[in-house]
Length: 271
Image (cartoon, rainbow, N blue to C red; front, side, top):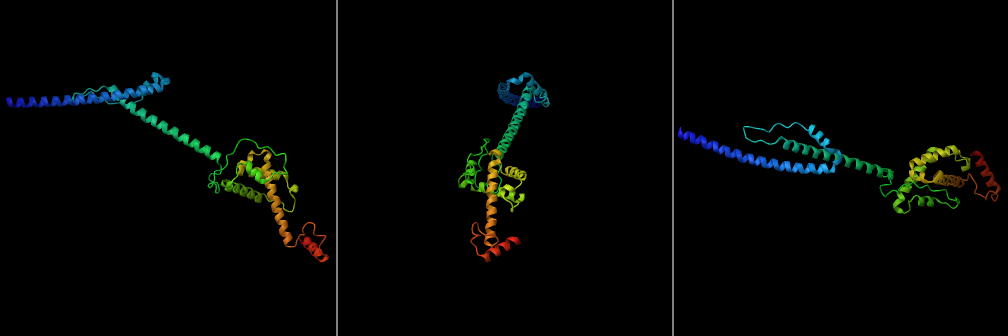
């Protein structure tokens, strides 16, 4: 009996010392966690002072329930407020990270949308070789001396000078040419004989395809380029007819022989 009682007493004393050491370690860890959580909560309360104490209480009210830590078997009594504060601190940390990620995503989308608007041809075939010119909101007035205006002047006003913008300017010319082919000019008539209302629709379609031309008042640059291309193509057709002997050159008809003039008149009548 004496040896048995001594053995049981020694085991109880050893278990009591182990429980005491484990309890001290748990209390020390909980105190450190509680201190860190208090510091973080104080910093957030300073940053969000306008939310007030009621908001903090509301967050604690909606926090998930924490099981009771009062245990008689291990002899550890951890304050429940410490665990509630620690869990709430973790929840707030993840909420802040999620909100920050959402804000960063919206910011990147906004920047991408602005870049797409500033560079409308960024996904085109020719604009990948050079940086497109920025579309400005300033209106370019009609020049007083229209006779001295050239296409190169319009290109300069668009900010597309230099070889770095050669592909962009070629894209604009290609778009204008495609719209003119869809329009269907009456090539047997002169420029002044074309329908003005239909020409207005053509100018509007070209401006939609080439937004940089919208900055010219009353689409005068679009009209100038279209008229220039019309005259060049009509002159090209006339030169081809002259080469085939269908039309005499200007000023040479009266100098032709009678035989040649008769041949020209016959060809003109057949055409």
